[in-house]
Image 1 (cartoon, rainbow, N blue to C red):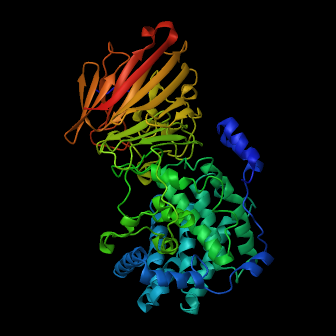
Image 2 (cartoon, rainbow, N blue to C red):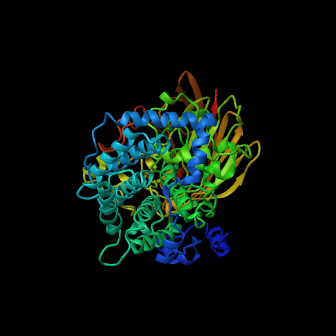
Image 3 (cartoon, one colour):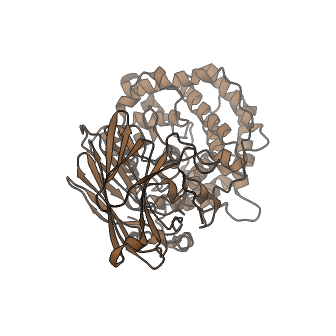
Length: 632
């Protein structure tokens, strides 16, 4: 039976403040401390632009020397050759598709912009390598089609940014070969539909310019691309737009500090970081330097975060608004980090070498990515840690087995708070895999368009905002603690207070801030106590307001309640949940399929295993909850 809930190197000073404060600062306080954010080098004036911009084309990601080396690698490097074959197959598939139309879904034409960016990457790279006239003709038709749109949807600037990058790459990679009227149309569109809407008449910057999320990376990157493409036509506009972008980007890059954890989750790491690396590549090819972008503190560390979030099952550690599973193709964004560090662990050679016809649709930046894939030279083979933690706005801890682990052990736990970008009320939650089965799940993300079109307020982050009624977003849908059947405190930052690696790694989270006085103290510890088990320990001190404490585990496995706990069954395997601390209290199961709300994500078999502890049973105001998950 369901229980119904009422959802009532650059600046040491900055790094020191980050450690001392544990990043426990409000969004408004973050804005007030802008002077402590490490800056990028920013020499951009009209004079600097005109003096330092590469004169010859191409100059976006490619330039003459890069292109020469790339063509050699296609002939000599099996990985580069295979990826180029996949790009050619993708380009051939475009010819049978209709030209792009301005189709708006909800508040976005983002799918149109992304498809255009994909088409330019595939067709454009084939044209650069082979000068294929069919690719040139199709690029011409695509550019004319999108540049004749009434606008690129500036009310949702991601749409403008991705379209601007697409058109900029198209006219740069075909420079001088498209009809003059097409180039003229494209340059005019980049100015009037791309850049100028980002300079409103009131003189204020759009919010994305200095925001601390993926919009900053994507939109500023798109404006840099457009500015380079139109620099001869309007150098003043181009210079001031690039200058604004280089000033604004650190507000998003600071979120990687200190350890590379991307607060929005692994798939949003892919989005924001992919636009960062293509922007870095454009700056390097056009100006010979990236102005400190690629070496920004924490940024290169994020490759380890990305890699550690890939579980043995093929799922992600899918916290925040993250997708569930990764695709089969090689990670081209991660390959950029391999090209910069020479680290073999970041270069997914086997995935890049799978048969080209099996890769199917490549990612929309994979044409450009062929450049840094070709630049990779192995220098080291860094072994992944079996215990890793990353601090930051949404801190995480991960335990794994060795590379040949027969149990395929994987645990991911997290702190954080609901008000981070794309965040959930999931502090203290965890996922757990063993023997190829994800026993403890995160409900993951759900489709934005459906929610927005219904009038749902998805993006509000106040304590009473509608976002927290969704099971994917609130604490009732995550494997954490809940007190008095109440929501977590949206601004209560849960931090990692202790971490130890070794054969039996462990980590402790201070969960007290999540409960806003409903508990006097709450400490949650995770410990890998054997190669096939996980210990979860909660040390709690109740307050006068504590009524009931609920220990929660979210699973899609079949559940059998047994004496002293429960038994999970899936794929002819079993996992035992041992209630070591409260054997006198029975666990219960709450079905979450169908989910409580019609707008909730519906996940077949989803359920919550609970242990409910009434406050009146707790002696001396302190209690320990000790639960062991073990393979049997």
